[in-house]
Image 1 (spheres, one colour):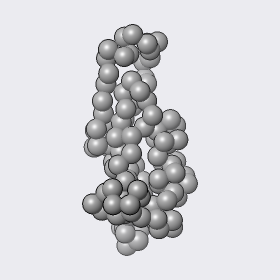
Image 2 (cartoon, helix red, strand yellow):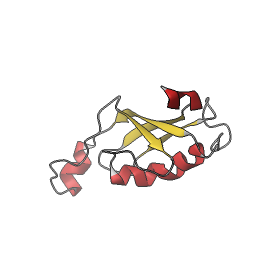
Image 3 (cartoon, rainbow, N blue to C red):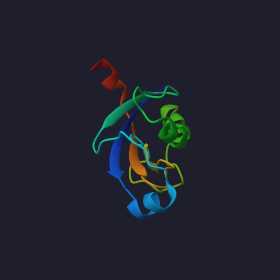
Image 4 (tube, rainbow, N blue to C red):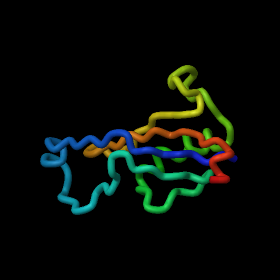
Length: 106
């Protein structure tokens, strides 16, 4: 099983939707642009958003167990995926990439 690097690539905020539909929340999302997490198979990385993990975990598992070319030709790097969390008010886009096994030795 390979480890999977998860990088925060984009964070969107839909203020109009938040004002109209969302109850005010103090800490709805703590992700930071460029933040990196390492997933070890099915284990959610520490500090990672539960809701985002629900969206990403099937893709993380696929990559961790050697799957590639998700959605047939979608990604330039067949051992990666670009997945967004399911937050309709502030979606975060994550780049998932398998890590070479020699990275474990570092």
